[in-house]
Length: 143
Image 1 (cartoon, rainbow, N blue to C red):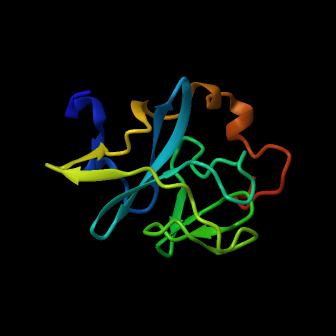
Image 2: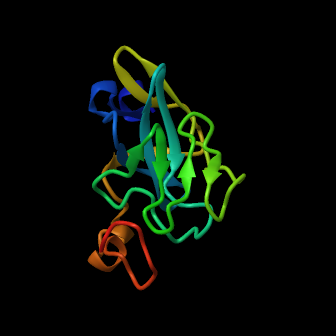
């Protein structure tokens, strides 16, 4: 793959108070990851909460980033964007799964050989409205 095949986004496209959702391929499966802006770059984490791994942190419109932490909108767990550690909530002490990226020439590039870049946005299996609504569990989105 060329460098362009590994380019996920321009750094300036990663929002400061939210996340940018990308789809990666691992083997034959699509996996979602979220990019989050840091003071000194960008981090990339697999897009699921450590408490309920079927719960997406970024439902397609950006995960909530408040007080410098990524929030799970289902049960208000918070994650440190630099380490991926859950700092509050039912999965406190657990860590998000990291995807290695590097920032160069104003872009964010996939550095993890276990994945291939597919596209910005959700994985095909997560485009169903039932997955992006609140589902049947209690959440903290006000819905």
